[in-house]
Length: 279
Length: 283
Image (tube, rainbow over all chains, first blue to last red; front, top):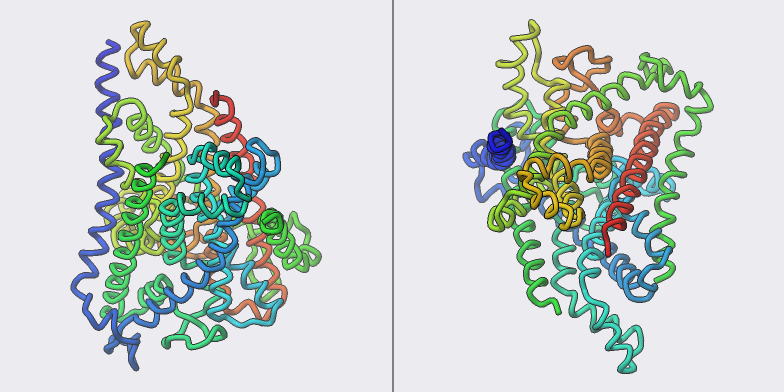
C-alpha cells in the first residue's frame, strides 16, 4: 500500500515539474511564434519613422538605446553603493553583528517592494526636485529598484568566501582597504553575476520607468530629455489597433526575451566559474 | 561605508514617509474607513472608494496562490528528495529563467494565450459572455510569475532540515513519501507559510502583466469571469491625468502607500520567519 502511494505521488510530482517546464517553453515559443514574422533588421537599427504607430516603417532603436542608457546609468549608481556596502557588512563588521543583520533585513524588504511603488516614489521625488519625466529620473528610479537585487546576490556570493583569506591578509599586515581590494578581485565573477541579474531585472521592468523616464521616439541627447524603454515600447505598440504595429510589439518582445536569455545564461556561467575558483 | 549602510536602512523609511505625506491630504479630506470600504470611485466628483481595487488585488493574488502553491510544493519536494543531480542541475536555469522573464513578456503571453482560452473555451461553460480579460486570467499569469519565487525559497527551507532526521525516518522503513509527509513537510510548515506570504506580497505589487490581462474595469468582481482592476494597475493607468487634480494625485499616492505598507508588513514577517528557520538549523 505504502509503495503504491509512493509511486502515485512520485508521478504527480514529476507531472508538476514537467508542467512548469512546459509553461516556460510555451511562453518563449508563443513570443517567438508571433514575433518572428515581423522581426527584421530594421527593427533594431531604425528609429520609429513618421506614422510608425499606424504601421509605417521604422524600428525600436529609440527604445533599445533608451533602455541601455537607463540601465548603464542605474548600474553605475548601484555598483558604487552596493560594492562598498557588501564588503562593509562582510569584512568590516564582526561576523555575527546585529547591525549587519539589520542591514540585510532592510535589504530583504527593499527587495520585496513592488516596482510600481518605486516608480511612484521616484515620481514624487522628481516633482519635489523639479524634474520632469527624463532620462535622469529613469536612472534614479531603476537604480533604486536594482540596488537591493544586486546587493543581495552579491552578498550571498560573498558570504560563501571563507573568512580565512581576509584573516590571512590582515595577519600579514595589510590594511583593511588593501584587504578589500584583494578580496574584490577574488569575488569578481560573483560581482559579474550580480550585475547581470540586476541588468535583467532593470531592463525588463516597465512600471518604474512608466512615471519617471517617460517615452519618446528619439534618442535622448541629455539627461533632461525623456527616454523610451523596451518594455514600454512593447506596451504602447500592443495598445495600437493596427495589426502590423501589434506584430511589431511581438517582435520587440523577442528582442527583450533574447536579451534576458543571454543575461540569464551569462549570470549562470559566471557563477559556476566562481564556484570553481573558490578556495 | 557606514554612511551607505545607514542610507539603505533610511531609504526604506524615506520611501514610506514620502508616500505617507503625499497621501495625507486625501486621508485628511476623507475618513480612512470610508476610503477603504466605499465602492464609489468617481475621482472627478471627489469620491474615492478603494474597495473595488483592494478586492480585485486580493482576489487575483489569492487565485494565483491557489494555483501556484500545489505546483511549487510538489516540484520543490521532487527537486529536494527525489530528483537526481542532473535533473536538479537542469532545473536551476529553468527556475532562473522563469523568474527572469520580464512582466511585460508574461503580459504578452497572457493576452495571446490565456485570455482567448478563457474567452472561447472556459468561460462559455460557466457564464454567457466573457471577454477573457478576467480575474482568472490575472490569477493564472500571476501564478506562473510567483512559482519560481515559491520554489526557490521552499527548496532552501527543505534543505535546512537536518539530514539525520531524514535518515532516521528512512532507516525505520518509511518510504520516501512517508518521510516527506511526516518529517519534511511537518518540520518546514512555518517555512512554507513564510514563502506563501512572501509570494502573496509579490503578487500584490505586480503591475504590468496583471494590468494587461485583467480588464481594468472599476467594479467589485463577483465571479472568476468578471473583469477587475487591481491597485498597481490603477496607479499605472492614471499617472498622466492625475497631476491636474491634487486630490486625485493624493488618492493615487494613497494606493501606493497602501501597497507599500502591506508589502513591507508581509515581507517583514516572512523574512523574519525564514531567518529564524535558517538560524535554527545552522550548526
